[in-house]
Image (cartoon, rainbow, N blue to C red; front, side, top):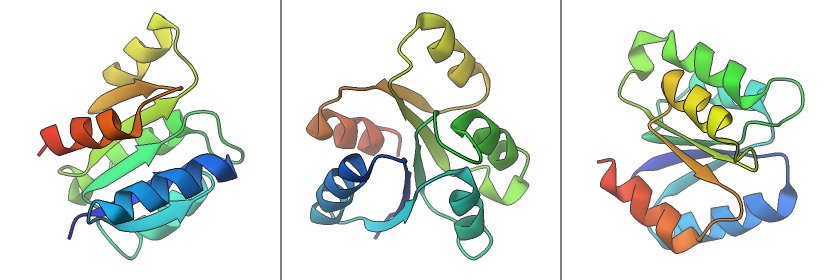
Length: 119
C-alpha cells in the first residue's frame, strides 16, 4: 500500500482527497501545514507528498526545500497542489524539485492518474 501525505489548510479539500485516495488503496496521512509534514517525515518515508503552497506556519515552497535536502527522501514524489496558477509559480515549483504541479480547481480522478504515472 502506497503512503501519501496530503498537506493543505482547507478542511474540505483534505477530506475529499483523503476519501478518494483511501478508496484507491493509499495509506493516507493528513497535515495542515508544512511543519506537520516534517513531523510525519521524522517517523516515516511516504511514497508521495501532495503539498499546497499557501499554508500557515511553513509554506509549501519551504517544506519542499527541506524535503529535497534530505537524502533519505530522494525517492519520495512531491506534487504541488495549489491555487497559484501563474506560469512563474509553476516554473518555480518545478525548478525547486517538485515532480508535478497541479492547479486548483482540479479533477481528483486526473490527479490520482497523474500520481500513478509517476511510479
